[in-house]
Amino acid sequence: MLAALAFAAGGCTPLREYVSNGFKVGHNYRRPAAPVASDWIDADDRRVRQDREDLRRWWAVFKDPTLDGLIVNASQQNLTLRQAGFRVLEARAARAIAAGNFFPQTQDAAGAYSRSAVSALNANTSFIQQRFANQWDIGFNLAWELDFWGRFRRAIEAADADLDASVEDYDDVLVTLLGDVASTYVRIRTIERQLVLVQTNIQLQRDTLVIADARFRGGQVSELDVDQARSNLAQTEALVPQFEIQLRQANNQLCILLGIPPEDLVRTIGAGAIPAAPPEVAVGVPADLLVERPDVRRAERLVAGQSARVGVAVSELYPHIAVTGTVGFSAAQFNDLFQNRSQQGSIGPSFQWNLLNYGRLLNNIRLHDARLAELIVAYQSTVLQANKEVEDALVVFLRSQQRARSLAVSVDAAQRAANIAVAQYKAGIIDFNRVALIEQNLVSQQDLLAQTQGQIAVGLVDTYRALGGGWQIRLEPLPEQVAIPLPAVGPRPAPQPVVPAPGAPQAENGGRSNNMNANSRVHTAANYWTSPLFPRNPPHADINEDVRPERGSEPVDLFNLDAEAPRALPKASFGTPSRLAEQATLPVR
Image (cartoon, rainbow, N blue to C red; front, side):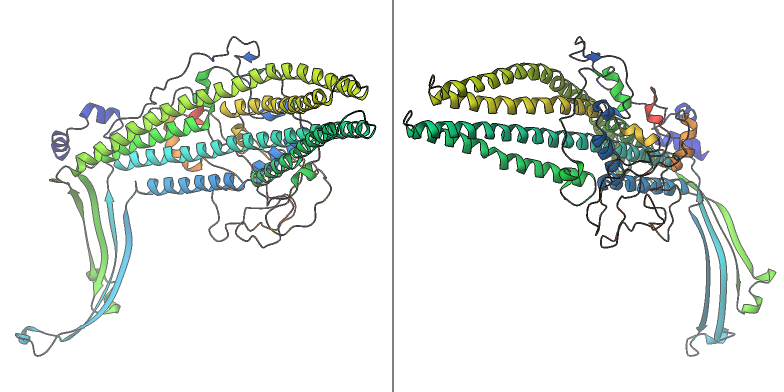
């Protein structure tokens, strides 16, 4: 009777839909449509392959062991990534709270003792049999609001989606981190190459200055040639501190990405060439972005969570049906408290129906509907932005290759021209003005070639980043060997020679199958995240209990920066949480 009246008065969710939803009001979630291009703009380019490639270790295409070591260290030590990991723990705890609300909301025991006295001078005191009295009470109270309309189950759905979104946020931070480490490393190698070229040109221009000075002293040319040569040399020498500033800034940025204080990391990793990128890249099709990009999946999960919150708001239109009860003992003397005659209690159903709320409930639904529409548009915008980022990175990668080929021809010609010009000037065939122009052009062309070679590598890095590559390493154990040991936060010894860590048995994969059905999602979301750094049941007494260094047994105190720290921070094992968001069709919520 009450249910029929509720449906007649509420009028938001038809009875048939309520039953098909699993006895929940509101609408079940379906993934919104998103605008996806049918193909890439450069799909006809032979260097753009349409097949899907395993992107979990995309940086291996550069075949640079130093870059591999930096990636491993950054994925273990980066502090922004750890923040994202703790946000996963927050979301997991919030999900557990939401699940707890499904069960009796009030379960408490209460007890009291009082001694009271009644004034003997009050009116009608003749009816008072005992002026002083004791009262002992103890009991248990229970109140359980039944999830008749799916209010609590919708809240669990929302918490599940929030937990999923926090994991996708972690993956997004990981993808960004890997791309930033690789692009910063490429930038360091590019600047190093620019410095080498500048030093070579400085030596060339010093030799030219010597020639000009000798000819001036011999009376063959005026002092103008000497001054012009000295000016050109000083101009080129001024590039050295400029590049050193850029190199130091890139070095500092790489240190922060590795989770260590700024230090001379360039000296630690040694000199090296600009990473050579392969001429082609496998990008799949644009629709793959819906599966591979963590930020796209996170945006979709936020939509799913808000869809469930609309259902929670709709449930407020219906009566809250509950069962309440109390049981206990009450007596004047403590010795009589637990006798049968001192028992008391009550139990029975109740309901509370919010009526005449002057549009507050209805407008709360409208508020959540508007928020849902906003998040749907944000999801669609994220998909468009993902497509744009891939196209931007692809055009840099492809066109920079063509530019590098042309610049290589220009540099070769400029180098030959500079050698010829110096020889002819020494022989008195040409004037110094032509020599100066040719040498300046050589400096410019060599610098442009180095920049373009770096742009090729950065373009490929940005392509893999835009495709969402790299988060997959969380689904497998990290390599036990760290190629480049780096200092951890806190006081540390002087830099040591690079010594690879000894091999150790691979950690067992404790993950679950990626194929998890929609019905199991609600029951397993609480165990969605597993990692030694973020354990399934983290200890309450010591937050650092499960945080161990790579070797040894002393825990790392994340909150004491003055404590002695090991040479390498603990490895954040990327466990194998279920990846329901990767499925082609998301479950109906």
